[in-house]
Image (tube, rainbow, N blue to C red; front, side, top):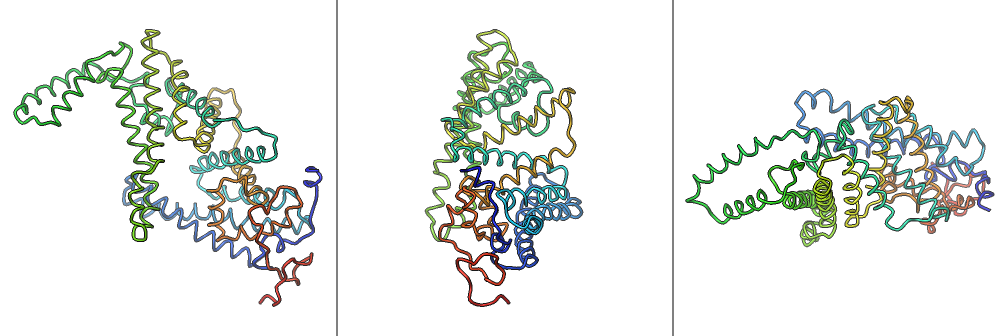
Amino acid sequence: AKMAALSKSIPHSCYEIGHTWDPHCGRAFVHITQGALGESLRIYGTLYLIAAILRKRKLDYYLHKLLPEILQSTSFLTANGSLYIAFFCILRRILGKFYFWTPGFGAALPASYVAILIERKSRRGLLTIYMANLATETLFRMGVSRGTITPLRHGEVLLFCITSALFMFFFRCKDGLKGFTFSALKFIVGKEEIPTHSFAPEATFLRREKKGKHHEEVTQRMNIIAVTKKLVDNVCKHGPRHRCCKHYEDNCISYCIKGFIRMFSVGYLIQCCLRIPSAFRHLFTKPSRLLSLFYNKENFQLGAFLGSFVSIYKGMSCFLRWVRNLDDELHALIAGSLAGVSMMFYKSTTISMYLASKLVEAMYFKGIEAGKVPYFPHADSVIYAVSTAICFQAAVMEVQNLRPSYWKFLLRLTKGRFAVMNRRVLDVFGTEASMHFKDFIPKLDPRYTIEPPELPIGQAWK
């Protein structure tokens, strides 16, 4: 029955299914372009400006490069939206009817491929990873809704355990990871876990002697904070530390505790910063919302996730060095997989899928470097186009299986017009397209329709 539904076709025009707000394709194209252009400028203008400030760009960048980069990325996103509606109408004209794949996948595939070629090459990889991750999640949800895939309990945690094990192994190997991924992991777990870490213990002892002299000078004015600091330093420095461990300023216990406190604080602050815009929007109407910024459950969950990940990884690495009496890259596989259990504090399919995608990308490029995997030119553009087309197929035919945040983004980009498609007609394909749009019936002008409209409008279009 499902295959029969997929092989069906409907004779309706592009006006009756897609641009129900205007019967003319040209005007509908202009409306979508205008909406997408405004939203794209807002998104990329803010994004690039913040990125430039954080990277401490020089004046020359602001004068000569900032605006062209904003306009190029804006053109890409605008083209993705406007070309979609253009190919939507073109396909209907060519085929003479709508099939299951044409309103979503068919129209979005060429539109996305042309659009990604407009974007800067340096950004294509990142966009491809994001969309491939989103498309995989969408396909998984489609499979679950059809009963072909049975979701695994705590599946996102299991995936994260496998991903973190492999990431940490590559991190420990010489030339295993490069660029941003290596820098991010170095920030999270610390440079002490890198095999090439050249922090000499002699330098530490010299530093301690200098600190000792400084403490002698300020003994007379020592207060509670200084006493506490000295006590903590003594506890940290005098304790069990294996000869293979490179955390020279701490023993193994304090090394793990400090790692937890540091990354818990980072996770807590990240979540606070993410909630600041929504909190300030309600500053005058609901001042109590400002307190929830600091005491929100998610703040502590993200903090616990990052803190426990680091402390478990460091603790297990130290434990394995004590047990085996050597330092080995293979320790990272065990420590990384056990540290992945920390995601129980902050379950996120998005994070798991994204990191898994990044791992596949890293392994693919390592395979190319080793000459074991062929290089495919423009692979990122093709993957982006296919992934975006899958997401658009879901947005048209089965919104219930699309990530809610991406659906909201599509609504912003089209000024809400993605929601006014005539999905009641698309229900014949058996995907419950109108599940979230039961109350919506488009008002159509009978003069421009092939089938009699369910809710005709009485006056002619001007």
